[in-house]
Length: 107
Image (cartoon, rainbow, N blue to C red; front, top):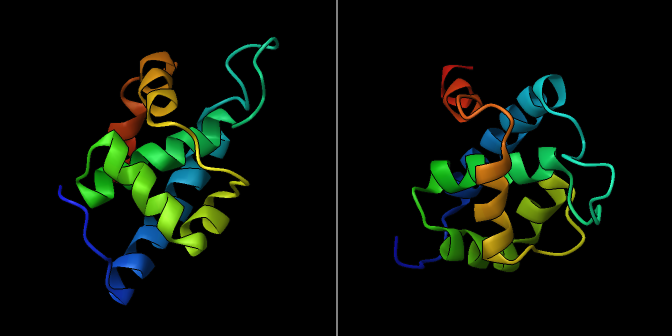
């Protein structure tokens, strides 16, 4: 996906997707994968960003650009800062259940 400004209805749809993802993540995922992690971002927040990536049909970098530009999306996820795109790709590899992203679409 090439970067483009989102329309209001796309932002609203993205916030709904984030809320769905957070409700699934609260039930299925722990806060952190390890007790030794840096604790900058919870696994639930990273899952919500992955769901946003799927909703926008974007790559990791474009998703981070969208989060940087739209404060309302950051607030919906509860982010104080935007993670680097590589953080998101590593989080995807660390997800305890790979099928949890599939569950997002069946919710």
